[in-house]
Length: 144
Image 1 (spheres, rainbow, N blue to C red):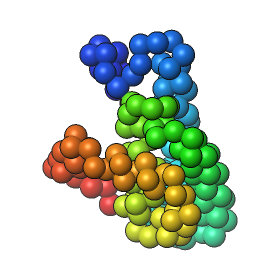
Image 2: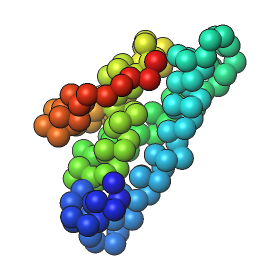
Image 3: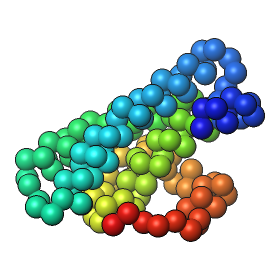
Image 4: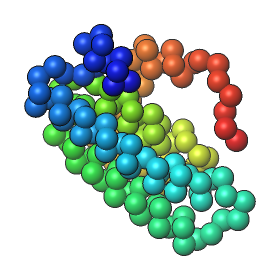
């Protein structure tokens, strides 16, 4: 994404300060999402044996991340500011889908995602984008 955004001068600002903000969030996602997917998602949904401790531990981390995103989105319409960027694309793929309860059967309910009003609004705004809908409609093999 970073290469394509830079090559086509789209979805990433050219001004250094704004570009750094997008990169900060993009790199935040690469560090945070493994706790959500590989941690919480694994133990909540994929693990054959449902163990309370890892589910609760990773749920606590997922909620901490959701709290952070919700606070950020209370101040601006998109993750890195006033415009849709690759940071939104990367983060929405995990967190936007989660707050719509579209990841891991009932995970959103378990995490009480309805409390994150700003992420909810952001997620629904992005979900209305035509390119997002084309991506979601693409034929792919789900990981069971």
